[in-house]
Amino acid sequence: MHKLTIHSAGKVSSANVSRETILLDAIRYRGFMIYAPCGGKGSCGKCEVYVRDEGYVTSCLYTIEEDIEIVLPEPVEANILAAQYEYSRILPLSPGPASRLSDSPYGVAIDLGTTTLAFHFIRLATGTLLETSTVLNPQAKYGADVISRINYCITVPEGLLTLQSELIDVFNLQLSHFTEKSNISPDDIVKICICGNTTMLHILLGVNPGPLAFVPFTPVFCEERIVRASELKLFCNPLGEVKVLPSLAAYIGADIVAGIASLAPVPAHKNFLFIDVGTNGEIALITADRIWCCAAAAGPAFEGANIEHGMGALQGAINIYYGQNNFQTIGDTPPVGICGSGLIDLVADLLRSGYVSADGYMEEKFLVVPSERSGNGTAIYITPKDIREIQLAKSAIVSGINILLRRTSLTVDNIDALYLAGGFGNYIRKESAEAIGLIPTGLSEKVIPVGNTSGTGAILAVRSEKFDRYVSETLDSMEYTELSDDEDFALQFAINMGF
Image (cartoon, rainbow, N blue to C red; front, side, top):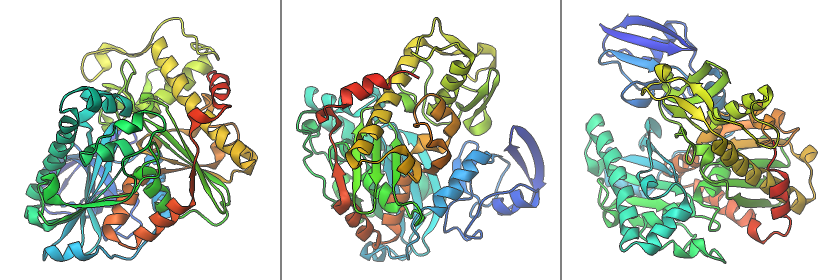
């Protein structure tokens, strides 16, 4: 027998379970609800739970071999998983010729973010999503945003090689972890599909990203690129296919193109917004015949960077803040920092209490968690500088939304839905986002959080070659607006700085 400890809704329970019990069965037997729309067949990957010291696992495929401690999704997370499944394309399994390189082929879908990397491991014979792992982008020590990393490539001898090596090393670490844990040969990993912003994809392939930082912001490449795994020295089948999905422009990358292509919106949504809030805020306004898009230089505040006690959406991050001394952390562990969604909640609460004024004035820093309650013995604060970073980020995004609405002669009332994507969208509470002005008034009730659509797009690309058609159709419909060239953007940005 093994001990199963379950954290759910702030409460802890434990039970003894037999060895090799399926985790999903053990959870359900004890009365906990887990979303598993595929019926526990492993094909949807939506029954994820967090296992301490292991990360997120697909519970219907996970057998209990030792004492484990798990954290069940909060209701907001469960709703996002449901929405992500409901609004994602379902395509037939068709992984392509690479799957013939092994008798037991596996694929990997990678969301290559500026701040966080997500790896999804897939059994190609069945399309089953076996495991998901997330790690911080190791390039962060060279700069929090893409501009600083481009600058590093330009100004530091062999800077590009250094940043590329950082990515290859973390890729190989995750590949090795999976093959060892799953007791498979590296040669069985035969297909890798990667989504990411245009800068990250240039660096990954060792292509100079310098032109992306200067007018007219011209990428060296935007098209899909396929290379052999051996060319990148990856720890997998050397003949394996590594597919980098296509981008549209310097600041509308494959993460956005594939993310939009992965959506299956309901027919009633004739005009809708798609927003992926990350280090950049990518915004798309989808109408019947065109996809109007732009990228707002929001900076990394919503991913926890440039914030005094900010961090990514990792274990120990305050991801939901209900009020003083009442918050939730990822992994249900003592807090060590605040991620983007927690920051939005916190700022909204400080506005309601009058601690922060509508113009963003904050007299002194605010104590969020005293040192004796934190997970690392350090008190957690939010500072006046943090408030200004949030103002800058949210103003850039709202201004981008307004510019696209003006381009199409639409108003907020004409928008049927707002699909909120990205890791940040996994936890954000729409009422807090509207309270600080991140979401225009009138749109909060139309928000549909769809989680990591970039990751979903990469997964679809691994599983089915038929996804290529949807990516191509999306690209053909997209029209890019460069906000720095728009005569109204500076005025919009100034107007939207206030809360």
